[in-house]
Image (tube, rainbow, N blue to C red; front, top):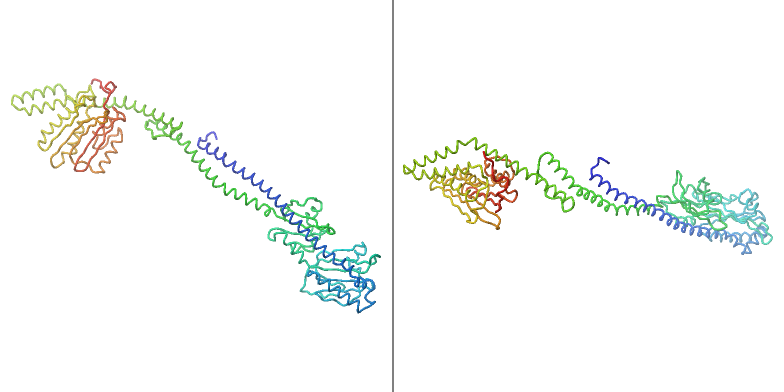
Length: 607
């Protein structure tokens, strides 16, 4: 960064100072929001899972309580005690009535199986049809009946499986691949505790499904109801129902006392929210798997909203940073460019102002310094060069002024002898003009002297054009002793003849006026009624006059006067040109009233 400009450093610093805090703020906000949303989401879902576990526990308990209610129905218990053979007709009727009643108590009961120990008779109810009586001598070949007998348990639940026929009494339809959970009860005599029989109740998963499906989002979340052996009793994954899956997280749940755990593997990444069912199903777990994509959806949405809201402001800040940086360093860039131009020798400041601050003050001082240097160069060296050039031209063109003056005097005397008074006057005018123009000792004269010189030139021209030309002077008497630069009128008058009258058809008139304006300025105006200029030519003239010290084209006289006014008066004097084709041409000079004759440029050195 050592070679970087101030602008680049400033832009980088401001961008770091604005963009980095914005990014850090959004990152921390997102992390905080994510954790907050996660905790709230887990808490909410646990309440849902807990409520679901209570509902399922209540439902399973209701199914489990179906058999115990039979103990209060003495006729049926009596049949179990005495056997069906004791009174076959009445006993079978009682069995059928009881089984039919039990089957119709809940719509989700798919099948009932009753085994009576006294007589080893068994009955089934399937699709509302009660089977005939059949001996079931190898009852303990059924693993769950054997387990009940062995462990003297009242209830054993067979996990989710496809419905099957007990003792081949029921005809299971191929079109009924229903999965069921079987509640196997052992019925004992009270109080002897002798075995009376077994009652199995097969229920389908409709009620469990309706309860479970209300606990999770089917499109985004997973649900599992798992027993204490790891068997999946019900799941959102239909293929997993009734199977024992070797999910590692299942063992993780049994070792955790909390109600949630974060889990990540190749198949799942998210949070498990779970709860145990109430006794006697306290070995069962209800589990809800929530992917991180769902868990953090609100956090991401909140973060996205924050970014979308903050992004326009960030863009505004970046744009403002660039604008401020560019504007802050622009004055420095402009100053450096102008300094390079000055180093090359061009003393022209190419800016008006750099503002009102410290850079503006620096630019103003630099501008003042360059103008001072430029003024010194113009006033000391350029004026001296022009004076030397003028002297050289005079030396090259003059032929012994004294000889010419004497010659004019001799010719004038001869003209008087021959009574040619007009010739004498013209010679006198010409002599005065030559004496005035060849006097190199002074370049500051009175306005009267300058007017007299112009009047002599006009008198000679009057002799040439006669009545076709007239002129007029309108000079304020208060200005006759005012000092002005030498030879500022005669070039203008000569320009009128050269470009205005010589090609004009009709009488020509020229007016020279001088007046006092604003108490401190002189206005000198030279106006003719010559052929004038069209708009295009006038614009070109204005452009050439604006190019100081670059004399080109036909109006060198006007350009010289403009340059000399700039040298003598700096920017306090100005020259204006107005014209209309075939009507008029006017040159107006506005000069300060005071011109210090003690300046170095007022006197030229002797030739």
